[in-house]
Amino acid sequence: MAGTIAAAINGVGVTGVAPGVKVAAVKVVNDDGFIYPEAAVCGFIWAAEHGMRVTNNSYYIDPWEFNCRNDARQRPVWQAVQRAIRYSNSKGVLNVASAGNSNYDLAHKFVDPNSPNNLPDDQEPEVRTITGACVDLPAEAPGVVTVSAVGPTGEKSYYSSYGQGVVDLTAPGGDTRFRTKGASRNLPDGILSTTWGLDDEGNVINGWGYKQGTSMSGPHATGVAALALSAHPDMTPGQLASFLERTSVAQSCPEGVYNPAPLISATNPHLYDATCSGGERNSFYGAGIVDAYNVVK
Ligand SMILES: [Ca+2]
Ligand SMILES: [Ca+2]
Image (cartoon, rainbow, N blue to C red):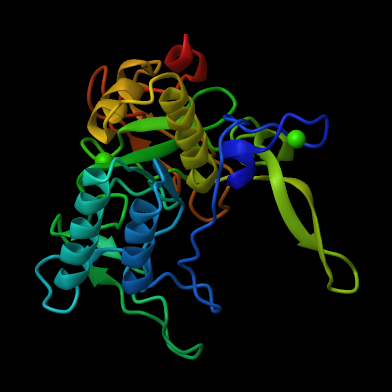
């Protein structure tokens, strides 16, 4: 993510969207890989207190993929996150969040099969029936720029969640299954950036690699936001969010039911079906694909 936002132009590896900007990693994840509400809230506040102008949030807050505002235990999460984001907006920070990789229509939610996700290994979560009172955080918090993903053809990546009134913008997140209709993976249709792996002895090796996800599209939008601020430093977070939408390239809905990768599942060829709604601004792409050149010209 950091590589996509800001990898240097230095003749080595990749170049980020905004190679001249400064980045900092704000650690909100614990050693088990969870991002709990307290850490996420502290992250937003820390970024605001330290003069950050844009944050990139490629995660949802654990352990509930959807926090239900009508649940006494989950409602405080919604309230605290919303308050932290409002505070960070007041300090001049724009927060960008990934829409998620579950091909959910976030505007019409019915089930959450994955929460809570911190149960012991021998326990599975119950499939919960949920309503619009349940929200993906921070993606659905007010004031957050929410980003879906498109593949190399500019069409929605098969995994990308979407939702009218939820997705504000879209950006390249890769789609390794789209052009083969799910028959095989084409890695270069993912996003090439800085990453790490393990060698045969289990040592961490740094380098470059392909990944796909709204975790890859969010940083493209974050990078474009950073470029926009470099060209127009006085914009408030609200002005910056509308500027990103105004300068994006509108992408219209595909007609009918969209089935990007029919062969991806042998048992369910309609696993990734999705239906786009809306007009110029729609559930798949929000206002459109972010455009780096349009924000600096
Ligand atoms: Ca480089
Ligand atoms: Ca939003």
